[in-house]
Image (cartoon, rainbow, N blue to C red; front, side, top):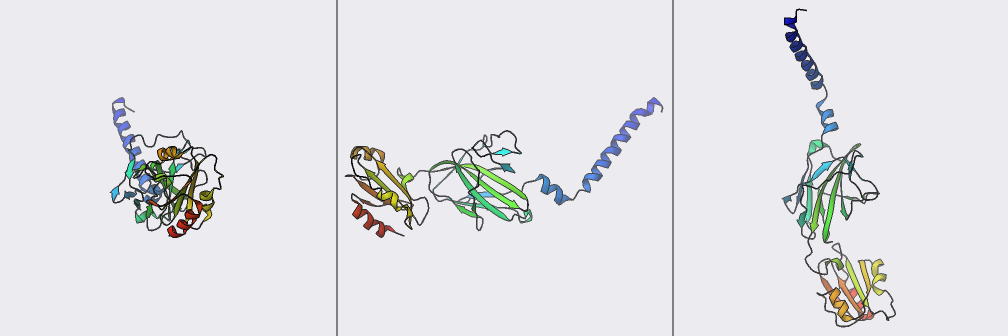
Length: 257
């Protein structure tokens, strides 16, 4: 071949190669390409405000160093996301495109390190989920599945503390929580702890204190006049206080939802 034609020949070969590759790609079914490479875009809101999130086909290791993506090193997922501040019992809503064919949607809230092990997922009904009132930083992980594919949408949140004894409240609506404070020399019967099997009481805290002053320092918003001290809470506030177990049991019956 004459050397002066060589550049033209190379250009022609390049054009033919590009055309061939483009033709091949155009013949790959669009749905197949989308299923293998894309993650359905979700719209996530909390009390009507849209939330930024990270999405992917994540997996978790058992002892809290995940999530990991494709078994690579754990990414710093939230380096560019600020936690979303929400009120207790705020409502989350997730909307996924109908064409995505999502069959199941579940949610998981991880406090502290992300540990997924056996997943304690809660199924979302009507695309909504209600947070509890456990204050502090946590991670929301939404899992959406179709056939043999699973996608995750995740972001950090902070549930606000609205009262100082919020950690003593029942965590869910329709339940009670109880608190018991007693002196070291008291014959402790764990009346509060025994109530966890009660139909309505799902949380109890039995705590030893040295004196009334120490009890008041631990719980400054409670009116503690004497020990032992019993308190009954619903999911929002303190309901009743008592200083002996007989009154405690009577009030517990009154407080039952």
